[in-house]
Image (cartoon, rainbow over all chains, first blue to last red; front, side):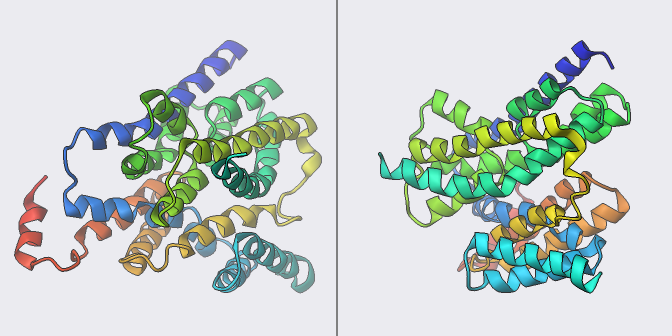
Length: 101
Length: 238
């Protein structure tokens, strides 16, 4: 692929991405009021989408990644985000370099 | 300085810090797949969506048809349609230009933190939103460029357990929603959908499949204090 077509490809991909970020707003403002079921569905969007960004990592990786996620989940019940991130990272390092998973 | 700006900068700095290893990784992998440093920086600056950028450069390396690369990036980013729909009611006070600018920066953590802030009762001001966005955007651009410069110097991301940071981060965001009504059925559906989709269809489609499963379950869950008859009749509506 030559340089010019790479450049165009990146810009078209950027436009497509921007379209996804505006699209939902454009669709939703076309409607006057939100049906309660649609509102309930919209409220679930964050949990539904963000789950797909970690659940496959838990099920398709080895016990090193699983231990890291379990440790982070337990820590997150009491402590804020950065401590949770550190605990999960430490668990992964421990699993890989000390336990040898 | 404005309190909203300070809170935005603080919150965004945490995200920028945890995203920087991925920015470096992206830059390194991009150059490894035959992109120039300029191309890698341009992708970070204009697409600005980590997971889809990684999918994109993976396909660049495999020399697949350009329209398929654009379609894949669109598919990975499709979830943003749900974000902009969900955030619409919280940004009614923004001008049209402010909305157009805000949507460009609507990445996963931006959406998650913005919704959390709005639901906690703090107004989602444009100054908070942009402070939060820009303190993530510029480090993302800087670190992906640095990653591209230093190329393969990072080595295997597994050695330093960099690969586990992103799943942990997203799981933490999900756990933060655990007191919302319908949390457990929605997360379970999204989990089953995304893992099944991952095995049967493959990445990146599992993201959209899992998200649709979770959102569908939420739409079908009983409405709080509403007679069953209305609920049934609404299901027939488009």
